[in-house]
Amino acid sequence: MSVLDANTVVAGDACICDAPLDLAADAGPIDCLDPRTRLLAAIVFALVVVVLNAPAAAAVALGLAAALGIAARLPLQATLHKLATLDGFMVMALISLPLTVPGEPWLSVGGMSASWSGVERAVLILLKGNAVVIAMLALLGSMDSVLLGRALARLGAPHKLVHLYAFTIRYLDVLHREYQRLRTAMKARAFRLRSDRHTWRSIGWLFGMLMVRSIERAERITAAMRCRGFDGRLWPMQDDSAFRKPDAVFALVSTAGIALLMVIASL
Image (cartoon, rainbow, N blue to C red):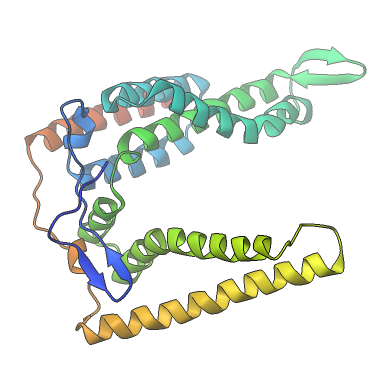
């Protein structure tokens, strides 16, 4: 949910838009925080949760992440769908852990035994993974890509990293559209995917042409930006915003939550 304003920067066919969040009446309190606050909170929370070794602490972390999701007003159905996708990727590892981790037997079937230690580790991974994903969706999911780039720049991230991020976000969609045009041209010539030499050669030509056109576009963008006096900085990534009272309150609450997790983990 973003709106274009007068700070749109056009460099040839490159367009990087200063697109602040459109804070509608139903925007959650998380959206009103400084992007740097949200980014720092997401990073610290993820790092702390990853090193937790106690299921109780991981369960509390999941509860805190759920509270963040409620505060951010995440859509329930879409969030559950994303979590189901994540859990689907982890299901084989979660099933195999009780069978491969040694420990006190929990269940024995057909000569195979599942251990309590394996079950505990599987539950721990499940809780931590879901907690991190929900927190990331709550803190960063509704953030505009330019705001995230600004937050990285203001927090002292290398300029090259910020530029790489900004152009990657912009041109992934451009490359996808170019790929779609090439695929449409192939279909117009009655190309059909088969398991034969012609198909593999055609796919090779497809990706080769995509690479060539990507390089040509990059050269045009570079030349256009130099003609417009590009000095190594993307000005839409620069701002003079300051931390406000809501950011301080959120920082205190977040610190208390992190401290609670560490205390529970140490018990």
